[in-house]
Image 1: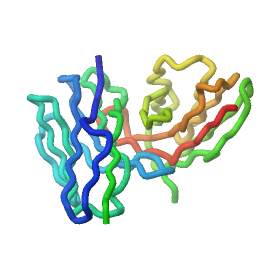
Image 2: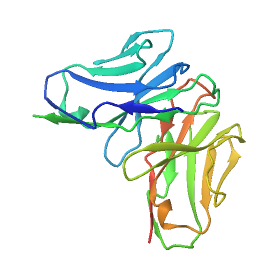
Image 3: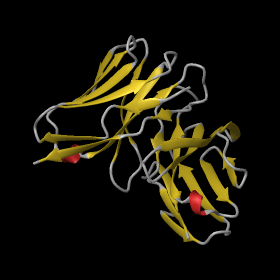
Image 4: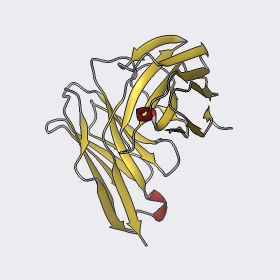
Length: 114
Length: 113
């Protein structure tokens, strides 16, 4: 079946350090992946996406890595700041679906210590 | 200048009542969605509409009825509310169906007592 999972429910890092949030997915045919950030009381906010024909994509302070061989996705945040504290979700779109349907993982809570 | 706005933000009601949640997007997107987030933060799609046409209906009880009067609006009506309906409901939109980021509203927290 389809599932997207995260390795750790909570990640605690020191301000200024780099953060790495991991995600494993089960559908090898998935062709589009997204990372979202959700702050308390708000909706998920788009961070970065990547298509299956790429293995790396960089944004401002964030990098997404895709390893299709082991079906693994990661989000790297450079120089983590207190404002990065939130729940982070990975999501995938199965190749079989052209409906825009996103399947979300269960979320990792990032705590940034000052 | 809110992109995806939904009302109300909070909704507290008793079992058996009927309630509606409204959603509007001003992004000019073609596709809109309803997602449900449970107490463990798990997000699951309920419905999607593309240009007012129902595309996804994820085995949601028929007490839930989405309505899209135009492509900028997608409302959710819930009949005979049950305790298990308590959750945060998120509206979202995307430029097109398939492989594009969803833009989410800030959610409606529904509490059924």
